[in-house]
Length: 134
Image 1 (cartoon, rainbow, N blue to C red):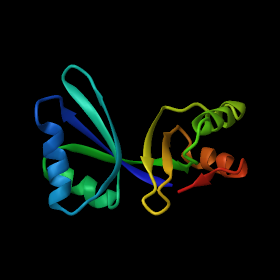
Image 2: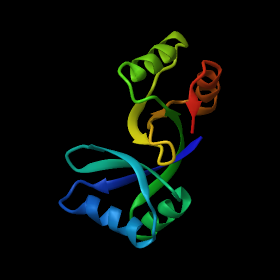
Image 3: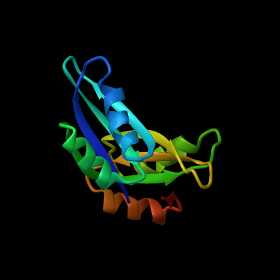
Image 4: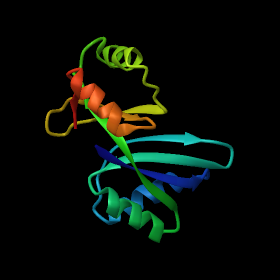
C-alpha cells in the first residue's frame, strides 16, 4: 500500500511551485502527482518518497494536508495494459474514485495509482488476479 499526500491549496499563480519548493527544501522526492482544480481551490495529490515528512512540512508551511492509502499497480508498458486492469476491476465490481500515473524508479515500469473506498480489499483482489502491487 502506498501513502498519498493530499494538499488543499488556493488556486492562485505560483502556489503549486511554492508547494513543490517546500518539499524540495526538505529533500523530498515527488514520484507522481495529479492536480484537480476548481475556481478557488484545488487538490494536489502526490506520491512522495517520504509521505509523513511531506505532510508535516506542508502543514508547517500553512497548507491543509492529509495522508490516505492508495494502491500502486505496476504494469507493463504495452498497448492494452490499462484496459486489462480496468476489466479486472469491472469484473470484480470495483469502483475507482480516481486514478493517475507514476512509475517505478527501480524497474522503469509504469505504476497506476488507484484510490478506492476499500484499498485493502481491492489490493487483495488485484493480487489474486495476478497484478503486481508496489
